Amino acid sequence: MFIKKDLTQKEKRHRRIRKKIIGTDDKPRLSIYRSLNHLYAQLINDITGKTILFLSTNSKEFKKVAPSYGNIKAAEALGERFANLAISKGVKEVVFDKGGYPYHGRIKAFAESARKTGLQF
Image 1 (cartoon, rainbow, N blue to C red):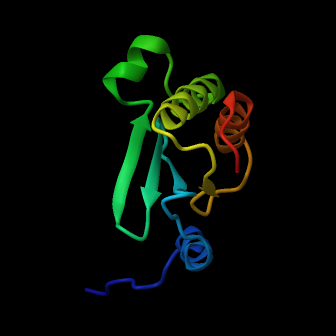
Image 2: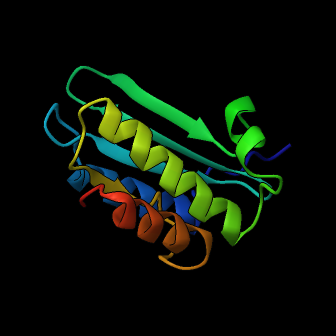
Image 3: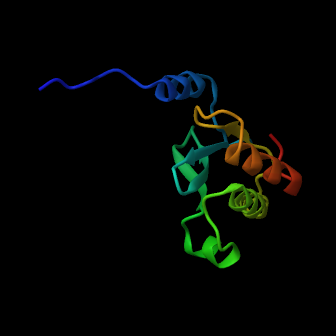
């Protein structure tokens, strides 16, 4: 049986981006993961290796706020809620890691909503 070891194009893009982007205490890395049905966002301090904040469209507190979870409206609501939580934790500037995804659709809606709420990147 043959095991394929080649990386997909998305994985190659993500590794190339991650070489350049580093989150610190002052500017943590805002990492996005997009699955077929959900969006996941987290703030990461790469120096200490700790996650500062995590929120997804799959979490219980988000499901109370937004009834839908896999579309652009949900991404906008997630971006707004995420930015509010980040600002309440004292984070105002972040480094945006779009995870190898194109800046389009749900990723763009999340980013613009977070910027509009007051998060700078």
